[in-house]
Length: 409
Image (cartoon, rainbow, N blue to C red; front, side, top):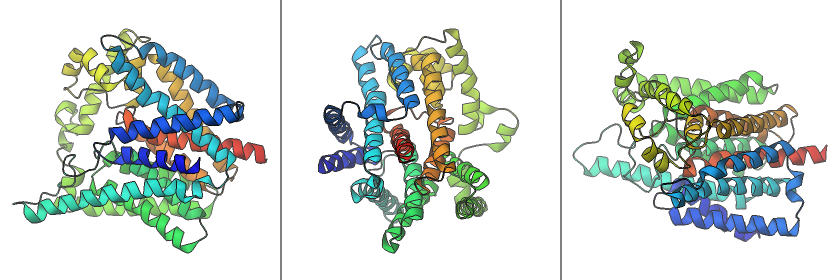
């Protein structure tokens, strides 16, 4: 069973980080689904031992999604996106929760941490090598050479940014709780390397989310060690960003095509990426309010086709660049609010674990990631494909740790 999980888990992480990995995605999630069904057959009451609030909210959420999983004009596409975006993710979250509840040291096992570590480092090194190759063999070397989707096997700097943030917080947590010096150094390297990649890729939303999340734990934590670590992350990132902004290369990496003077004047549609979001959100919100309980059907492609006129008004950015607004547009306000409540409930469970000081300090970093993912999702559409996977992995972790903590107490 552990070997089968390792294969499925590795396939999922390859799908998260690597381009052209659709087959790995379906194979990994189908194998996890099979293992989940086997686990339920061996212990039909296993699910009932997970947090009841999460199970109820998940059930309501899936029921609300179902009518939008078979929407015309292409019900097969919406059903496929329902499987990819929601059903498989729900199953992996529940399976991880059951694994963690049953095995206290599961997340410290190489079966768990080798796949994300290897996938993250391997694809990142290939991306860095590909960028450097362009510099050494091409006629020019732009400062934004690494901020490209088609130079390497990296799935995309936006798509993978959520996974990089999860790897950063998860491995930072493993570093803090690990006793073995060699493994501590390994976990620290993976965590810092993923943060380095977010900087190289110019992921401003990710860096902002990490800073705000780290600031939160440095304020709220009663543990001096965790407070100091949160402050250290913040100060280091602030100093690094300021140093980069003092250079032309750094400005091109972090500010890029944004026009801060236009943003200050309220000319949002001309000011760059953040200003364009401020411009399009009211347009999509107005469209959603026209019929709050209806939706286009699940999936970004279906949403794009159904809202063609709205997309033209919204600078042709194709979607709302906000998880909750996209979910509302696709499946109605009732579905979006149910997911929002589930998200906040999971965040509260993580905080509850942390404040009880159970499970060492891993719960602190799960809370930090969930908070960071929430911030990023307000600026990006994270409900599609493997963008969404990190949330469900962290959610499953929290549900399993909470139930394990409750049973042990």
